[in-house]
Length: 102
Image (cartoon, rainbow, N blue to C red; front, side, top):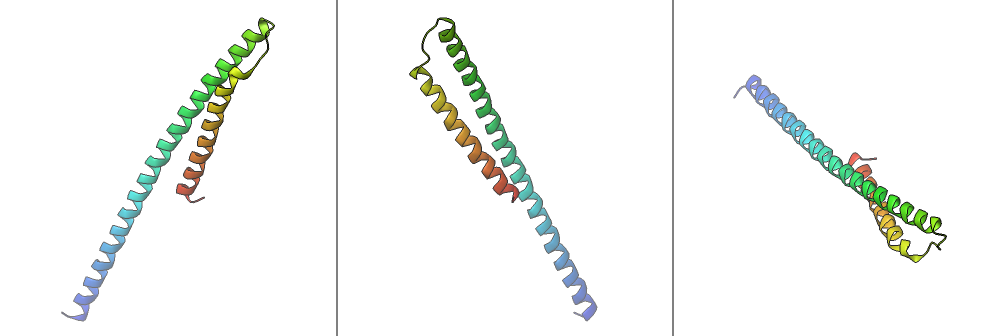
């Protein structure tokens, strides 16, 4: 093989490697994008559940207020579930930041 042919072979080898690296990088970015979208969907679902519980809390508190009743411990489970989802939302947001490299 002559020097010209060797340089051409080296060029095509380099080009193939660059194309392969680029395809791998795009694949990784696509995977990251899909994972981020899934996590954002999870966050949306958790927030929607919280909104329902907030509405239920509000209805119960208002019913008790309206009936001049004491507001008490029956709201503890709502608050605990909301707190758990808020923690999960923070965890998912940290995962998104990690994936994005922030």
